[in-house]
Length: 518
Ligand SMILES: [Zn+2]
Image (cartoon, rainbow, N blue to C red; front, side, top):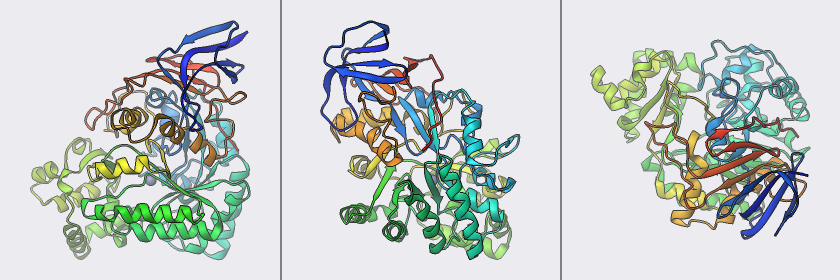
């Protein structure tokens, strides 16, 4: 007896092959048969007539750990509702393991308050063990964050590491990878990694070669210095042979948009020269970022205390204001999404706050950073819609939320991508025809599975895990915007995870997620 039989659907198997009318049989958590007509009894039969049957979507760039929702909202409903069956966390340099000391975890405090968090694990093995006891809505795998490693060793110090210290981190990283982490992540723009030397990045990266794991990198610059930043990661990949995936590739700020063709050319050239390079992108033209990253590098590279003292010093404050004015950026339209201890800023633009405080927009930014002790997250409508579409269609891209899973309404504003990324991407495929369906599905299934080294997921092929999404290609769409970020998407009919029905239309049926290790 089969567990589940999906009949009459149009199967897009994730490999890039053209859609076919096929039935799919599931037993004991796995796909057991994919054929034109499967007969036989099943405990449950789903009639998927007119719908697409695809491998479950893999969100290779996710922050449910650093926003802590993995623990306080483990159903991850906003992701499940998009057809996401697997998420990869530990991105942008910050992971929840390994924790060398209590300082390690501070890498996430730019996104989430550390108050009330109970850390009862140290190693990657212990963290994954603990996670496996949580009833998870989706499968979860983690990378190891470079900032987490560094802060565990040197705390709040912002400096180069000595050769001995690099050796220590090298060993801890190797252990964490052996315990099941899927790769390493770096957030080179952030205060605690800005000072890492090329030598340090290279030594740590070489650990990934052993099991062909990958390096996920938040670039040092996504604005005027993006070309240098790309050179840095391309060189790192060339020198080490490690596969690099650039996180949430984008060009922030209108004045930097003219660099776009050079960005794509550079990546494509590197790829054609054999560099293992790829990137992920989200289908929105608004970024969600930490406000202090708009300051000049010298002001934030010393960490939170330095940011605050730079703002407090009259001379440095003036220098920062001059720098901001020279950027030619429309700071006024930036919307505050989250402001630690200052709920009154949330939902307001910098322009509104500046008017309320009777100061300039640039001054308002510094006042907000000071009031929130630099814990402020903003939406900035600073990406070109046209360029976002080109990135979605690029052969080097995968599509990912760069967001977090939520199951309830939040007091802060969250980016619409947390509820809408995959349906919105697929609605663009239907409406703008930027790719064929099978090419689009490949970017969110077998492509990420291949980079992750998970041959068990990302395709509809016998013996693979039963992670499947059934959706209506005519209606699939995301409906969130910046002030209504938590509306469930439309068109996802069923989600199966590890052979169990996880979602039946808008109802969560089973929490069937597993911890994913390598
Ligand atoms: Zn990032």
